[in-house]
Amino acid sequence: MSDPDLTVTDPRPAVATAERPSRGRSAAVVICLLLAALLTTPAIVAYWGQRTLNDTTRYVNTVGPLVNSPEVQDAIATKVTDTIQEQVDIEALLNDVFAGVIDDRPRLQRLVGPLSAALNGLIDRQVRDFLASDEFADLWTAANTRAQQSLQRLLNGDQSGAVALQGDQVVLNLSEVIDRVKQRLVDRGLTIVQNIPVPDIDKQIVLMEAPELRKIKTVYAFANPVAQWLLVAVAGLYLVALVLARRRARTTVIIGAVLAANALLLALALSVGRQLFIDALAGTSFGPASRVFYDTLLVYLDRARKVLLWLGLILVVAGWFAGPNRYGSAVRTTVNGGLETLGGSLPGGPVSEAGRWVAANARWLRVVAGLLGAVVLVWGNDLSVSRLFWSLALVVALLCIIQVLVGAGRSETQARSPLPGGAVPGTAK
Image (tube, rainbow, N blue to C red):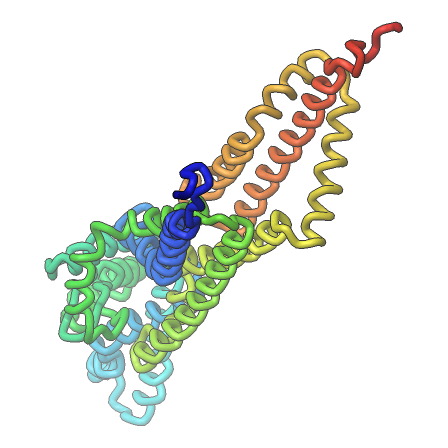
């Protein structure tokens, strides 16, 4: 019989049991990273759309600068001027006025031609003067406020408002601008334009060709309720992947690379979308202003793309710095050692007391520093590269302060530790 105490137990089942949680954890990390990578760009676009198109104030602030754009002013001026001139035949009116006064037809034509050009020039000048005035700036703000609200109604199936869907075109109503210009002309003595009829079709300017807008309305109805939370969910996926990862420094590098790749993908999408938008409006009166309109409307999305790229690069560098590689370890040791030495040279008292507490809670304090940087970055929903670097500077400063206090606390602890033989540092033998 064999001695039970000498029985050898096969260790392989225990190893398999230990490996299963590790494999499950690794699989969860991979799944989270894949989902986050696939959803990052859609989440950013959805959040931009939800914030810009649904928020009247944000939308008006976005398109407000267009009022000073020469391209936009020229497009609107051309449309309004052509509309008025098409409805008023200046030469016919002048011929009728002078018919009983000047019988010599050649002389009449020599007079009518310059007068007609002068009156058409007057109309054009009055239109452009109005578009450059504060009155038009106020009208532009009011019109875009109504346009944003009309766009919301349009996406929800309501055809009323300043923006409407006609066939496959999204059009902006310019009737108020035309009425204001007509009144300015009447005030300056050109009363012939006062009662001219303007067909509804001539009061509109095509903003875009949108044959797929009906499908977009369906997508909007489904996506709008979740758009504002999708970005939060993606951030949560990245955070879960980082928490579950065994090699967090390497995971940080991967997350940074994924963010940078999504920034490049978003840049490509914006570039392609810009060209498609310009091509769609190439034959319309708003065509010359399509570039500036697209760039202005998507300015916040382009800014988010730049922030995403820089954030990805920063995370790649931070992951490398925190990793076990030789250079990262050397830099980390040098920097931490220098900061702790600085902390150890500080005078005792409250600093040392605080240092001992910070040394005992350094890990979660570093997490808090990172969260504060994130709050500064997203506060007010006004992402920018400059704000990213300010938040990074805040995080670096807080981490340095933490490390200095850790050095002060460790120096105080070492000073109080008894030496071999029961002696205490600083006491006489």
